[in-house]
Length: 240
Image (cartoon, rainbow, N blue to C red; front, side):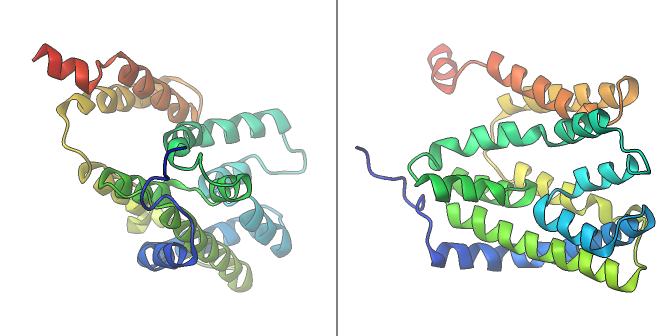
């Protein structure tokens, strides 16, 4: 049996390091959690229901989308389809980190995935590109994000007012800018422009002509298919 990849273990020191590294970004999550708490109350949820949704679901975009469909009669199938479309990216994210979680015990492996979100996955993926498979970043960063998300929701429930339209202050692009920074700071490989471009164009087309939120899964599929068509690095080097 091969030895685990360096940094691929899960220990307290790694988790604490992940919490510390994610703490500055997670402070912005409080604002979004506060907005969700306020919006949830306005849609008829109780404070307890809003807190339970944030604590158990832990998926900001899906939770806001669910509120748009919330009412006296909840359309269950559209709600499920919308949630699956928004979170379909987690299929690719989970597949990407499977090789460096495979050696962990099942409880640690699947427990780590419960805390996976865009930003802590991106930071853990950046660590891997730098040669370190940092499971502690995935878990510790997820804990920091979860705590601040629930805290923000609690503040929104308590005070009943806050920033209901974060886009007015540019707060809605914070996560996007962070992920773009992680992407640009990664491996310099011009061949990656093809899947990035395919994903972007497909997502934009879906936003214009397909149902709401379908651009998430359409962009992911287009980028993934374009990546499959790319020759491997070894084949490119051989051709050169």
